[in-house]
Length: 253
Length: 199
Image 1: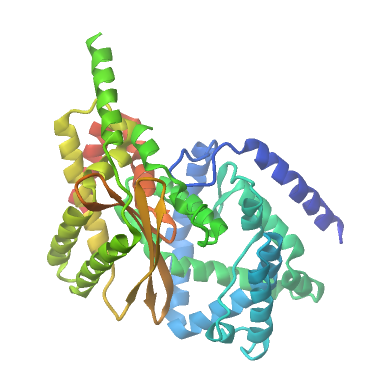
Image 2 (image 1 turned 135 degrees about the vertical axis):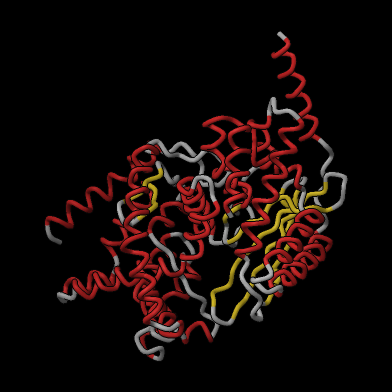
């Protein structure tokens, strides 16, 4: 491990302590969102909106225009497959061994029979996609999101999820393999393609929010936090579902 | 003194409003209810997107018949509703309903053989029943929709919807926060009416 990676590891170890200390809101929707840097975040949001309108949005539209739905589906499958070993590790760290094993099975089948993952053969035989990151793992361990953040270009996150991204980067087996074999350019290309694909997928939500809301920043913030809470709950548990929001408290607050 | 008295009376009224007897609906009944609502939603999707007027009419009807609008209005406003006159609340209700109808009637998309499937229903606390469902489509990942139902003595009503885990109530409340902070309920009503006029 080189010095850069060691530095990142130290940051990664310290970050959870930082955001655990900062955390003041529970990981459920409908309660006061933890956004102490709102003024700064709004400035970054405005910058990102400009970048999206003039650069990222048009490129994403070009991506959608060039590649038909089926091709984009295959690219999405391929990218998800590359992430699957990381998802297997995270599902296991969350104590969800069943999904951990499912992820390993999916990676094996899709990387071979599924032609490097371009075809999601595993899904046809009942192995559903597993998409877990270290931010979700930290959430499953009970660490709260901490202050909400907007990153330039990368968009919304929380201090917990930012730490999670660093964690993923440090231990992602596929990423480490590609770096070791000097395929950094390819790794970067996969990240950029993933970002474009996500932008295409979210096009309706982004445009709808811009057109119909009074405060798009606040909408994006609450949608991000609610969605992450849902992903951490894995949509399975009734006890930890989104409906932890207390409507009777909402009437009073 | 009169202001304090007014606040006390309003607070008591709000507590009574919340304590109004509510019943968690039986799971089987909740499933039937949402099956019916799902059918209404499919009928809206089957209406051509160009016929926006009819779509809005159908959506408005669904909102009137199946949603507890009064509770939704109050929950979205929170404490901003305190001290508001009846006229203000009525005006907000109209603007809010119109806003929701316009947003969803145009954004619901079109029907292309989607399947509406109910997965399960369960009680949440003493008052609510949640129905989990999803929409299946050949070329898109399943879309998860959760419905929260409550009976406040006037029959079963929907009090919130969460699409892919994102609650309508929580989202709209966040959306209105800045307007309320700027100038209270009055500012929010003006902003909503202006937004409705734009769309």
